[in-house]
Image 1 (tube, rainbow, N blue to C red):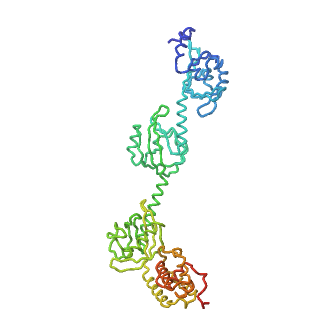
Image 2 (cartoon, one colour):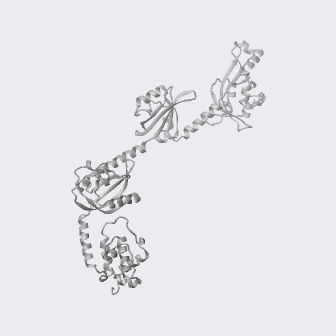
Image 3 (tube, one colour):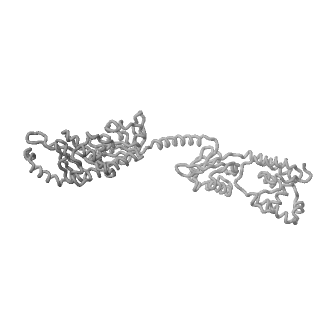
Length: 499
């Protein structure tokens, strides 16, 4: 179309008819900034119905509509697109947010460009503003921007056309210690997030192809010269009509350090386990299958090698001589998680028996619950104690000859023995049996107890027998020691004649 055609009023109307049906908004201005004409799309983009509602000129337009840049900064009146085109400026793709002053709840986002129509002599005759409504696009971009920045997972976006980073979120900056300007605009050659990836060649090829990069371990170089262990993945996306790659990361540094610490801890445990002279056995908690033993354990049980021990259950090995004691030991472990110094008899492979104090605790090995059993050979100590108890039993045939102080001292001697598995308690005795035990502790004979409780002698003897059976004792002196160990009857009066 020639310039001469455009200068005629008739053809200007024809031009207006052509552009009236366009989806882009068009505003025509005179050189004096008077608003001459606007199509329906332009009116709709301003929320008005008539050209007069736009304002008579650029100055009135600025009073009726507030413009802001996308960074939320207000546009100065002199920089309004309508003012700039009035000065004869040529520009394109200027993004502004437009809000009517009288209705600040309604906002559009316009992409504006300018055009100057000249006459046949090349002199400016009319000014044109052309605008597109990009509100939906801007809203989607804003939502993406907010989501991207608020996402705690570290992430950067790389533009595929030049492999430069165009976005970075706070999570990535905090994870790495980079400043924003150390990332934005930087190429992947300078900040290569795939440099130390475990499958670098595949990742690089996928990046070149704009295809999904699967999760893989990598090592990020940090601005201070250090590095960080991460999991990296890449997802292609389109942003502002450009092909991009979204890199997301998982910080594995704490896990990496924990794994190193765990490995060192396991190495120290293994050394201590092997070198300690105390017999140690590790078995699974659910079925008591032996997982490991140390050399001291093999030596103590006279076992030549671990092959004949590993993979078998504690019951199959049969080194705890009393099956009942073994079941009681593991029942206590299952209930409380640990036991301390339980006396058991251990059978060696050569059929010899030794007395041991067993302590055990629950440990986690390879995410499985296990029991760690530690044995201490107390055969000599036990023999000495038995000899002492035998001597005490001999002289305590009649406990009434001894003062309460001496009885309590003998009980303290008994306390040197290792604590036993949970046994009968005082409350397991009937009221009458407790009365009988209390009188035994006073040093009374059966006939005296019968007289005190007004019972037949045979009835007393039956009660005494039941008490012995429940307490697992075999004499008056053992019953007295059992009671003293538990602090029972300490306030009872002393046997007659004792001071």
